[in-house]
Length: 122
Image (cartoon, rainbow, N blue to C red; front, side):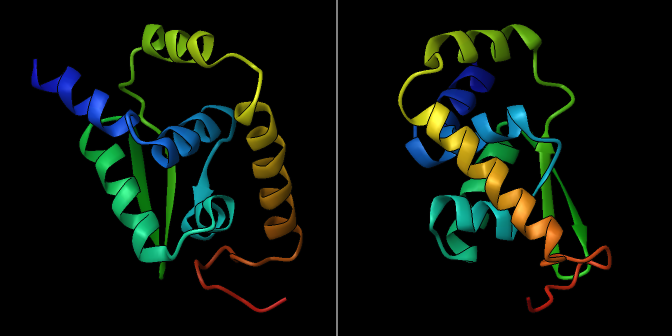
């Protein structure tokens, strides 16, 4: 019962749901990707991501100064299917999908977060 309550709490906040949906379509996101995507400070992003992590929905990996997030390997595919069908492709998910792709593309092209995990200037 605690698991479903934790998952419900984690996905019951709009920004956490938005980033979770983004992770469903993206291999991994750096904390700076998430911050730019949501328009939030790194500390706020970390708090949101911590709640998703505690619920078992995402995994994280620290590389140098930066933390990278990806979909949790233990997340039940039926849950992902239910979330995807419940949200649909209208409204903010479609806009968010395009926005996160653009942010990731720009960050990777400009080497904003290099392979050593250091944020570099453009």
